[in-house]
Length: 161
Length: 267
Image 1 (cartoon, chains in turn red, cyan):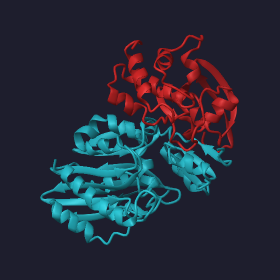
Image 2 (cartoon, rainbow over the protein chains, first blue to last red; image 1 turned 120 degrees about the vertical axis):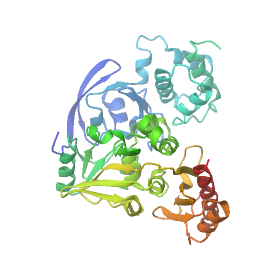
Image 3 (cartoon, each protein chain N blue to C red; image 1 turned 180 degrees about the vertical axis):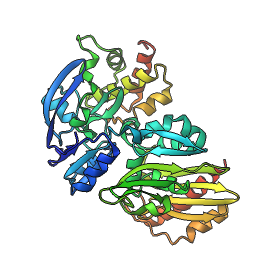
């Protein structure tokens, strides 16, 4: 695209399903996912790039979807929290979050899960330090992180305490 | 927060990006978007046209040249952290990049973005200044190079003019120099309250302070604690006060991080 446009028809693969939509250039990826595709698992938290509640994985890279334009995702493969349990059976990370009481209000959980998935996709046997560093961009105001770190460590080991 | 209406272009060549930037008033380059998107939400910036640089793969390259480095402006911070070229030439760049924000931001955020946004609290402006880097700036009239010492001209302002683009950062070979960096951030890997980068070579320290002025402050001193403290005290610093630190406290911290950066450069 060599001349500026106000909007664009984009095609994306979200959790294995192809979607084509006309989007305005100003539309943030998080709003595209929530409002255009009705995938409301991805949360808007701070909307300033700090909290990580909107974390999704785009072409294998974890990012905060409030800091990317939907038009920039054109042609990409996006993973959101909905893709973790496509048939209703919990992903090992989700099961571990449940077992370890790694959530209270749950608002940060979708972003936390996607950051954890990105970590385990790239580093299947992380140390505690690596887990803590991986979720540094995800803020939880309920749990104090201890149970979240334990849940991720457990999922990395295949579940169990 | 919705962004104000904006136009968008995604050029596939650097030349086309420069053409778009120089022929459209109010056009701004969009690199990683980890700063620009947020200032647009806050209406602190209102570009008319966003020129997305993410398809310009040639700007992502990181290469080693004669022991030095050529960092493409669109190299991501995580790309720098993982680069074997950076690790062998000037590993301090990877160490400092790893202290910026968090995984998600480092996945998208770019070297050129951190440098060109030139927020006085950013990590890379003092670092590339300490390393004696040279910036390559491309405009419709061609390419020019600007030493880091002259590149940072004010808060959020650099030598990159309207219609121009930073394309690469050339870092000279260490050639026996040691590099160090120290900061006092707001939480681990958070925004810096004060930072300092240093290179020590042939018994002389080049120290560059961040967060204490509109642009990085360059000092020279013998690489011992007393000389470094004296150089910082004699710099006439008048740093800003904010909720995180008073001006006096920032001036005090500037001495501490300068000493630590010089120690790191000799460690």
